[in-house]
Image (cartoon, rainbow, N blue to C red):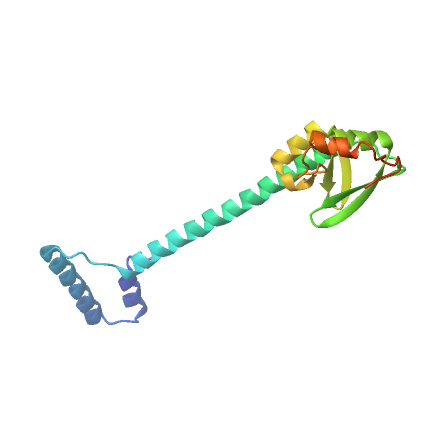
Length: 182
């Protein structure tokens, strides 16, 4: 290939030799004047290229950050799924209906009396996996809550206040039926 673009255009016959000399002379003169006066010549195409490269680098950083976030979320979901599958308690279709709230919806699972007792004592917790609910030990539920607290269903009453001695005295005459379930 011939050297510069100007040489290539001359060889192709697209510009005349005297026009090429005139352009070259004007360019040298402009550079000399700029050097002597201390004015910096701004090449707009180079500036536009630098700006485009900077914007592309910023977009690439954002895309990489989004990809990393998605990959981290997938890894956390896989860890949670593995914890649930490895530690879920076997649930035969029990005879006790246990009601709990998931957000604003009331859900029901059937468990046996032992599991109900463990849930009420805080030894077991309910965790949401896709559209199913599983029973897992509370220490495992704490590990899951560290990764994603929205998966754990809190079965304890948040605003339950202990009864005072006076209230307990007043209620002592009332018998609680054995079949009372919430």
